[in-house]
Amino acid sequence: RYWIGLVAVVFSSASRPFASTSACRASVSNPEPSNEEPSVTQRLHHIKNLFVLPVPRRLIPAVFTLLLAGCMGYPKTVTPVQPFELDRYLGKWYEIARLDHSFERGLQQVTAEYSVREDGGVRVINRGFSAADGKWKEAEGRAYFVRGPDEGYLKVSFFGPFYGSYAIFELDREDYRYAFVSGPDESYLWLLARSPTVSEALRERFVQQAQALGFDTDRLIFVDHQPQPAG
Image 1 (cartoon, helix red, strand yellow):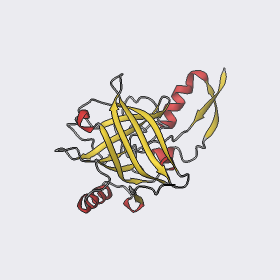
Image 2: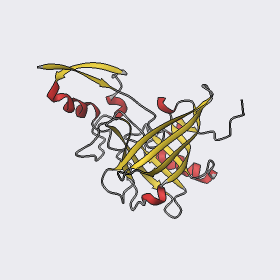
Image 3: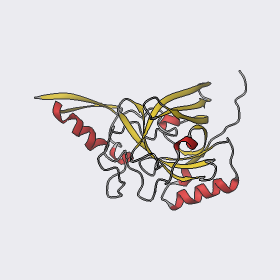
Image 4: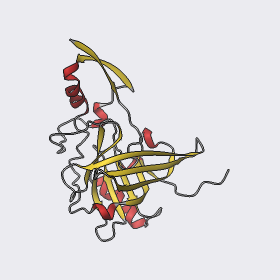
């Protein structure tokens, strides 16, 4: 018998850091990246916010897998850092730069705060100020390591069972003061830091390295962390 499967494609505050794509499936058997496959952006290009798909009920999980496969990967040019120490990564990070997506559009003073969950995962609190709405916006998610706690490669969810990848490919190994982060493809990129400003040398290195890895650095947005005037 055929059932009507309602598939919601929701980009809910995803990365902001740690939520690159919340429309990704919960697990993956082979998360290795491959340039042979179409990107996440290409896969979802023709999918609207909600669509109706007639499939047998037993095949609905497979449909999710086919539609969203690749969300747990990362660009082939990127290598997650190893070793990685979660305890040193926890705490508050400031978003210095990003590639724009609808879930962060118009947000300034963006931060991400990470803490340990009771189940051993990572609690993610993303926060940013919308000047257009005149208010702060906040989203809470959860993250888990994909292959092991010694590698900077996690899956993050801000919506139900759907996860997107979070790959740290450059990290200040000495003090954990900055991180370069990718999502499932080259359209997701962030520069995070422990302070709201970084040196010009670090900004330039981030741009040059990201460009060499295939990211469109001309589209980078550098985040304003100036406090908004009262009232």
